[in-house]
Amino acid sequence: DRAEDRGLVLLEAEARLKRLALRLDQQRAGEPASRHQLTQAERIAEFLSAHYLEDLSVQDAAAHVSLHPNYAMDIFRKAFGSTIVEYLTILRVAHAQQLLVNSDQNVLTIALESGFGSVSQFYAAFKRLCGRSPRVYRESLR
Image (tube, rainbow, N blue to C red):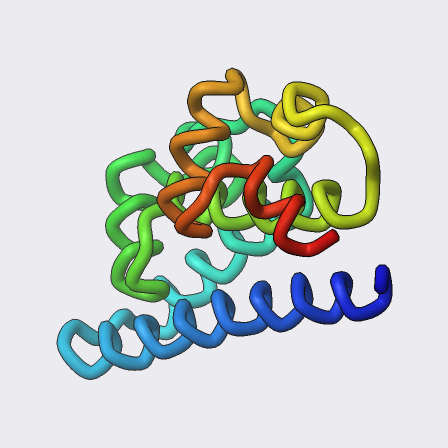
């Protein structure tokens, strides 16, 4: 049932976000970021969330908040317990999960529409984050 499949995808995405928030809380306990740094990191996260389907780099995210890329990476990691690249990958994989469940597009098309530069990058990231290949993931939810 499609509605049930969508529900599973939403639950999986929610669980990922909760794990990211938990890491954020743990990170803050160990290495607190200043309020200004957190605001900058939040602005980077918002930028990534709005543009994750585009070809983005750490430099693009840093430029959005007028920071040096190394400093942007540092404050983002302190604030979210994740790198900018990993956060971007999570957003892209979540988008791909939705497409795998709700469309009949082939995996290559889904990989490219989800912002990945290559199918091999997509497969590696998807398997690492979801524990199975995109094909097996799709089949398990149909």
